[in-house]
Length: 184
Image 1 (cartoon, rainbow, N blue to C red):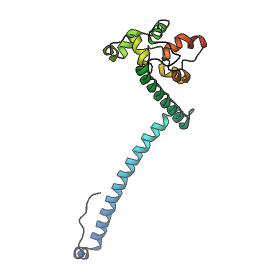
Image 2 (spheres, rainbow, N blue to C red):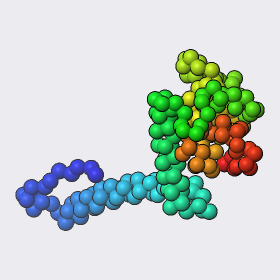
Image 3 (cartoon, helix red, strand yellow):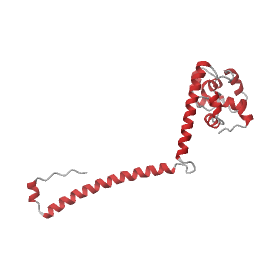
Image 4 (cartoon, one colour):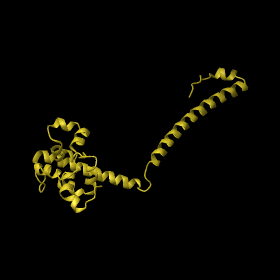
């Protein structure tokens, strides 16, 4: 709002009715301009919120989306715990040792070592082979073993696999495919 100089009582008394009317109009114009600016800002906010709402799938209400996000978050936490335990104590009880898991990956054409290294360049710095990295940590970090397999989607569809401490593709290669387990 533009600042106006305050009139002293003496100055106000010296104003003619026309000057007084002009001063009031000037003040009202400044207030109208400020309100117009505020409305424009609100309309921009409404436009942004509307575009965000249009991006929400009407077939899946927000409550379901939140429940799905919460479920995924819990799964990710469980995987991180499994990752920590695996580094500390080795594979979970009932899960084959790391070398056996690496051998099981050989049964799957879904593991692509060159893709894995290209997608996750830090693996080269780890000193592990791509398969070893995947079974020791990559799966529990949610890394995909190749473009044709989504680790987190497999865990989400088969949460018992994550809870048991299996690397996703190792489980799929050893049991999941034969059992007809969903990939997503």
